[in-house]
Every structure is written in C-alpha cells, then in structure tokens.
Length: 390
Image (cartoon, rainbow, N blue to C red; front, side, top):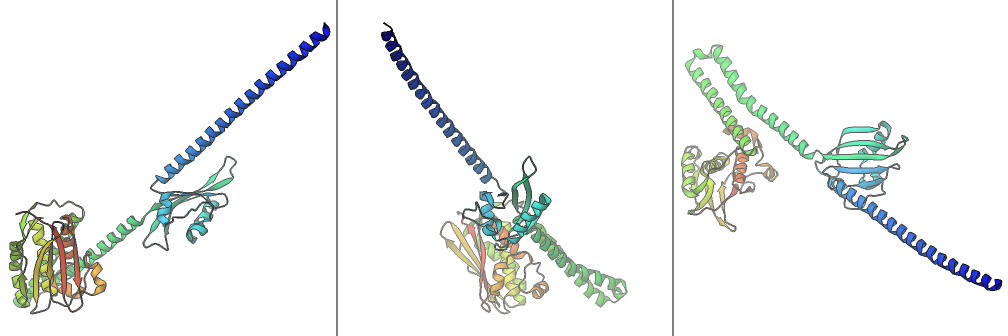
C-alpha cells in the first residue's frame, strides 16, 4: 500500500510542480508584457514631450540656442535658423563651426565667466543690415555645476532702420529750416541796423524775407502732408475722376513758370476715368509737372499722357526732355529730401519732399510709381491708378 501512496504522492507533486511552473511562466510573460507596455508608454511619453517642446520652441518669435557643457549646440529653434539663414542640422556643432561668428563665440565664453549677459548687440557680418540683441545665461544644476548655456536672440533690424530714418529725418529738417531762417534773421538784422531807411534796399530785402518765409511755409505744409500720409491718417475721398480736364487745369495753373522757360506743355492724355481722390490726384500732377518744368531744358516740352492697362488699371506718365537723372540716383529719387542737384533744387525753391508725397498718394490709391531716365534724354515718371466707370 505504501509504495502506491508514494507513487501517487510523487505524481501529485510532479503535477503540482508543472502546474505552478506553467502559472509562473504565464505570470512572468504577463509581467514582461506589462513591462514592455510600460516602457513603450514611457518612450512614447518622452517622444511626445520632446515633440511638444520642439513645437513650443519653434513657435517662439525669438531665436533660441541651447548649448551643452561642452559648448556644443543641443537645440536651435526655427526662429534662430531663420535669423542666421541656416537650413542644415546644427546639433552637436560648436558655435564657430555652425555660424562662423567670432563675436558670438566670445559671448559664450563671457557668459561662462560672468553667469549672464543682457542686451548685447550683434551685427551679423554676412547679412545686410541685420542687427540682433542677445540675452544669455549659464545653466547650472542643483550642485552649482555648469550644465550649459542658453541664448535668446531678438531681431533689432527694423528698430535700427527706424532709428536711422528718424535721425536722418531730423538732420534733414534741421538743415532745410536753417537756411531760410538764417536768411530771414540776417536781412531783418540788416534792416534794423539802418537799411530800412533806404526804400530801394528795404524793398529788396523784404522781398527776400517774404520769399524765404514762403519757403518755410511750403516746407512745413509738405512735412505735415507726408507725416499724415505715412501714418495713414489721410482718408481718401474716392470718386469718379475725369483725368484729361484735371490735367488741363494743372497745366493752366503752371503756365506762367513754363512760359518763363519757354517750355511747351502738352496734354496727350485721352478721355480716361479713374477712381481717385481728385484733390490728392491734382497734387500728384502738380508736383510731377512742376518738377518737369524746373528740371527740363529751356525751350523744351513737358508731356502728360497715358492709357489703359490690363487688370483694370490706368498708367499715366509725365515726360520732360531735360538732362535726365543719373543712374545711381534712380533708386533714391522718391526718398524724402533726396535731391539729384541739391544747389539747383534749393534755388528752384523745392523742399525735397514732392516726389515722396507723390509716391505715398499713389500708393494710398493702390497704385505704384516709378521713373525711367537716361542722361541727356530727359526723365519720364509713371504711376498707375484704378480705372473708374463713366
């Protein structure tokens, strides 16, 4: 009997052993599968976090650069690459290897020594007029050991350009005001010193004072006009404008100065209708024709013409047969206070703002303005307007 019980016990033990063994392996596989799922979840979470971090960095308007403890690039966002015109991968490279900007490499060394640097201005050598402001700080761990460097870049180019424009504007206005004011002051002092007792001299001096006072008034009016145009404060009174009668009126108003130089004024403009502010458009024609008379040749011709173009536009030109505009001046001719011949322009009484006003008025109508000229062959100014309906 005992041998039978022993055999049964052994069989039972073997059965229990294999049952527990199978259960153990089943549990082990389940645990392993759960561990793999957990690892995949962790990996996916890490990947998602990195992706979200990259999206966040790339959505920044400021350029961002992260360096590791070995001064190698760990992360550079999209704005940073755009600022420096870079399309290649930067990770793992040093600043000098990636950018070739010595000032930036020196800034990284300075940050490591000082801990942080703010409002550092940097001009990029390979890009025209690109200015950056850099704020940088060292990154340290809880033990105070340096882990890397973070640099944030702000594009100052637009601000620098505006600052330079403002400085040039102030200098130009000061220069333009100084000459007539000096003349007025000088002749007034001369009159007060006794010249007023000579009627002939006094009358001549007073005419000079009057002429320079008118020049000051014209300059101030032009400054106010261009300031309003550039700030968008001018509201156009758009209406249907018949161009040929408007040009005829302008040519009639300018007949006297044209006769003084024996210049023939020709209106070749066909019967065209534009959608425009008539008052502002008259100012455009007056400026262009007046310039053509001033700088055209004596006994020459000033012609106004134009026609329809594709796309519902009207193209108009004002042409003279004077000495023309030098090629190097063509790109700047519509700038404020720019003059091809400064001495002659001031003698003619110009403010240097007429063509800039023309440009802004035309652009406010949705048109464009340009000039074509060859030395000794005159100059032709073109501009476009939206076509109107009769």
